[in-house]
Image (cartoon, rainbow over all chains, first blue to last red):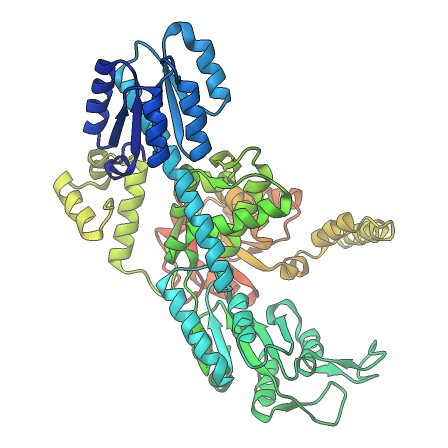
Length: 459
Length: 151
């Protein structure tokens, strides 16, 4: 970030020095690097400017008459704790400078300094300030979003799903939610229930893949006393308990064919019979089903009934994988950071750019659930304020995971494969295009054309 | 597991359960009934071997993912002859970390084997395949997300 010209143009610098020549030299060099530079020829002048204008980085001489660098540091930190202060000091004042660091200075530069060193330190300080501001902004966004909606997203695709879900709440129809594991299908189901006319009543969830057929029958429909060995008393099933509310059937395509017939009958007739019973019991339940499988393929393969599909999928909501809504990753990461830091009583409130870069490039086979777990683990390990790469799981840091195919059942096109392969080779070549071209067995011009065509390496 | 060993292991699990050490009992039970234990997890990862079995990267990464997602693991060896040794290492490391583990072996076409296993086992969230398999397979009939491990 420190080398990013856009970042530099946004960073506001105040240079404070009572030596006019040194002041002019620093101003010329740093303004030339793209920073918005203001100068102050004394400590008093610096304090005046700090009162009227906000600065990201203050570069100040330590020894000045009347108001010295330490006073500038203190005032600057009082006004804006996020701002960073760099002190310039002669050899004789290094001990004071170290003391200043304890009081919150970012760094000190000993005279005589090299301009490259100044550039590097100022760049790093500006990057740190930008990071703190970005983190603060994300935290505020998360706070605002949390008050307004149940689901943390700014992704247009997910927002469209939420719009459709809201429309479906009024219709009181059955809903099928599709999406990979960990994309938040149950969260959407709960969202629909909370915004529906049934919100005052119960929401129940059952994972159809977690039970044998006999157990699922008993769970869903209950049983009469003595219906089978061990049925010591009458038991109400989830379908009965959910009367007036919503029943969420997760992994519905894992149901056996005979269970599918029973469920279809319940949906069609709006009544059921307990196991071992004879009397039909009327129910009023909204069914929301979910699956991570391709339902059409399951129907074609004869594993899922088409008539049941039509009864359940009056409205279909499809949730994208997290890797297809990458813009949500920083916001979700901060949401989980805050959640788990509060729960664990930790002060960690910042995510380092390196961590964010790794997260943004990861495939997340486990989607949002996996992101939450990664952040939770990181918070548990973090000792300071910042989540660093050392707090991430090893396999994630090695970045070995590649996507073979994401969309359910979709065969990757030749272009998809070529793009993925070129990206992988580029990573292998550490971004060196000549080496990547050699590894691919093509010339640099051909590689350049392909990179341009696939938009690889463009901002 | 031989029948006598299963009985011993069961008695051991019951002893721990009666002593109130439910976690140990659960871990022992998961070793005896890996299929049932894997099914109780939130989901499963189907890890598919390459021609040389399961690589160290595959074992480490799939266990890491299973651990943080609270998933079980199904390790499918295709072809089994070459994969047996690494599958045993895989099983041992999964047991060390308390991750429910099922090992399946199939001969013949890996495409057919993967399709069959992904239909047979419930709650598979995604597939993790070795890179050499990724370069020679399509898995057109598998409607689950598929990932592979690069170098």
